[in-house]
Every structure is written in C-alpha cells, then in structure tokens.
Length: 300
Image (tube, rainbow, N blue to C red; front, side, top):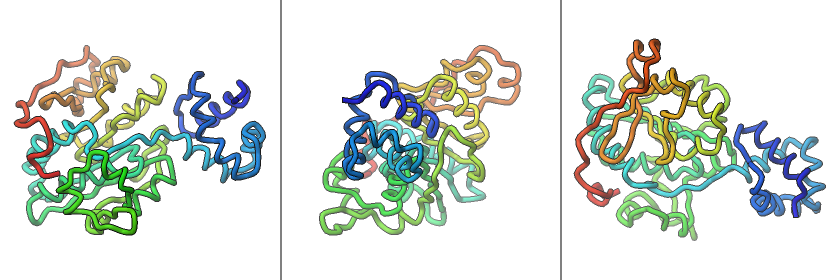
C-alpha cells in the first residue's frame, strides 16, 4: 500500500514535470503503474520513489507511466465529421493559393488521433495539396510509438473502420503498421503543454482534446492563452466534449469565439478589438448542421 508520503512525493514530481494534477484518491493508480518499475529495479515502491531524486532516467520512466494515454481511432466521431464536412471545405477555399494545411495534434498519446486525421486528409484533399500534422506529447514512450505507427489487434479494434484497416495498414507479425505515406506526413515532437511552444509555427486546426481536464484552472488558462497565437486567424481550436473556454478569466474567454458546427463546439480567435475590450463572452455563431451522424459515409 502506498504511504501518504510516497504518494505526495510522486504527485509533486508529476506536478513539477508536467503540471498535471494527481489528487488524493489516485494512490491505486500510482501503485499499479509504478510497482512494475520498482520490481524491475529489485526495489519496493517506497524505496524506488525515494531514489527518483537521484535518477533522471527513472524519473522519465515514471512520467511516461503516469501520463494518461487513453485514446482510440476517430474518438467521439463527431469532431472528425465536423472536420471533414465543415472545416476542411472552408480551409480549401481560404488556402487555395498555398494549397497546404497544417494541423497540430496536441497531447497525441500513441498517435491514433494524428493518424485518424491523416486518413481523412488523404481522402478529402484534392490532388496537388499537401499537409503536415505535428504530433506532440510529453511521453517519450508514446512518441516512439507514433513514429513506429504500429498497433496491436486490440488497439485497431478500438474505433478503426475495417475499410480503413484494409486501405492504410499492413500486417507485421501480430501487429498492424500504418502506411509509410501517412507516417511521412506526421512530424513528431516532444512537448510539455505547460512549457513554451517555441518553433511550432501556426496551425489551421489545433486538436487539444481531452487533456485540459488533467490540469488545474491556472494551468488551463495559461495553456489556452498561449494557444491564441498558435491558431491561424481563420483557424480552429477543438477541445474535448467536457472542456470549454467559457469558464476562463473574462479577457481570455472573450479572446476565443465559440462557433458551433453541428453538435461540435469549435473555437476561433476573436477579432482583436473583442479581446482588448474584454466584454462578456460572445454567444458564438452556428454553422449548418452536419449531414450524417457518423463517419461511415466517409469510409474512414
């Protein structure tokens, strides 16, 4: 059983390294994920945790182990539907001169989100267009998996349509490997969302889904504030279904304009005058309803 001192030490380490919050009540999770690491070193959990201060490599393993890596293909479906039916067509008009799109999959985990987006762009971009997907995560172990693009049978069973499996994957032993042409479109970078975003450039769409829930309110606000220059003036920010900008400080809430696309809330950079004047958050605009309830019509 994890002692309160051991748990507090691990919680402080995770908070210091990632800004993620591990509150009391998650002792079971710490035990389940760190006991194998301790056993591999021939140590009990408390002794292992006590030695972390002196071992940077083990600290990295702990961060990898305690980073939440829940993901699946085309997770929640409707954001991907909004992406292909509303966002991509609008961006095709606005980027007609450049003929190139840039997408950021933030907190990409093992890459299912990034490669789900890649499959859709492969299907929906006209000939002569190119795209780059930047996939970032704090876990180096997860980033290695994104680079490899290999997934178990259990993983491909979580949301990947059979048509996409046949079209984009080849069998490699007991695993499935995604097509090289899609891997070439995904740029993998190590990034802590609570740290500076230097050198990333701006993006047409930022997928920041199901990650803000793991941060405290101050860190959430800081991340959303620093996301403003990362999204193109006419670009889109996507959050998880339980995440919003509306509970942020007034000036920050006003800087993001909510736009509903079907059942999916998206966020756009508000005009500069709105941000500077700091009025109450706008009610946002609504795009036409999407035409179908699932991704089956796209073949993805």
